[in-house]
Length: 221
Image (spheres, rainbow, N blue to C red):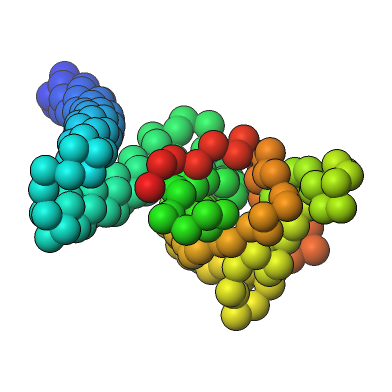
């Protein structure tokens, strides 16, 4: 009986170890698949953008065909954003050091539009503890740069409220897994942006603010 009991305990332990190892391997493989899909979509967007530029320069396609290419590029960008959000979520789930809830400014993207000084922006917020209650708080976004008004160059910072149509500022956030914040900003003609400064202010007296800087590097529209 004692031998049988020890054999059963060993079998259960081995089965638990095998299951945990298999689950971690599957999650890691799925994350790698998401990254590969992201890269493939990026390559497809780049190829379509080159095709669109060549077509417009050569004037060998009509307006409808060019618009179709733009629609395809926009759809692929949306797919890339979704893939990156899902990949960020899985990275947090697989992070062995994520033992307590921690807010993260995962990514910030800018895309130029057809209008001068106008840009699409997309901010991605995530957390390390996906099993906890929803987190909430406020987001402050500042664009640092140089003002050339009056022929003089001086440092200047613009808040998102000054360059975008937002219903409330600072921006409120509330999510359990991740949240995207997107919109359009229009910069003054006499302003040269250099950096984007983002600050998360979690609700609660003991919660520390989260800060991150991004270089001003918009993607072509």
